[in-house]
Length: 111
Image 1 (cartoon, rainbow, N blue to C red):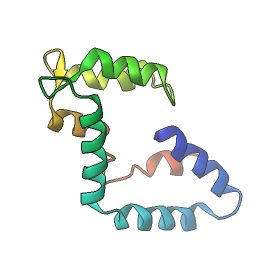
Image 2: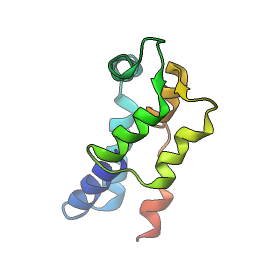
Image 3: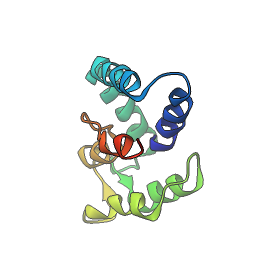
């Protein structure tokens, strides 16, 4: 999650410079295997889906608000961009999947 990544960034800032950390993180992201990421997202979807084969938006929002790292209202609003009361697997994947590109502007602004 973003919070976990932020913790890693803060921990690593103390032991390496930002450029080295950025190169290391880019390497890690580039090495991730899309098939294993997709399988993990599929497992999560299957665990949450109802008898219709979809995930209830209200159930997912409740789960994300009350377990693990608490999401902000802005992060939860992402779910609402999809019409209806349920999410299909492609919609769920769009919400859950880690972006392929990292936005380094956030890290560089703090320099």
